[in-house]
Length: 148
Ligand SMILES: [Zn+2]
Image 1 (spheres, rainbow, N blue to C red):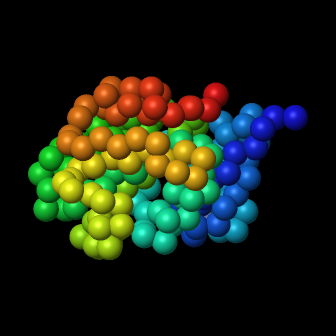
Image 2: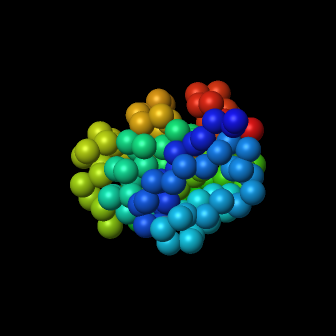
């Protein structure tokens, strides 16, 4: 039997279990029906972030950004490309630190953009500054256990 991964739905926050061999089959949230990984960057809120950071076994890379931050806006298309490249093996999400000001203090964010990589219920790595898609993908593959 294949190992199961825990994935928090980035839309409603429900924790789903997905067998590793089904990760690529477009699994959906059992609660709200949203696709758990459509290889796109999903905007998350502070509650979902807290849940996903604590529960997810699939690598989750979160971009802490804000609309007024030029480098953040420059990196957004690169972040989206990296999400496509990593496919079902990891998930990429972003959180707007202007809409959710408490997450910056809680996560000790000193400057944006900052990316934090979570796996198995904890932070495993972080990196600050805007970087190209290849570097974002490389960061995840090097630091986390990407599925598949
Ligand atoms: Zn859901």
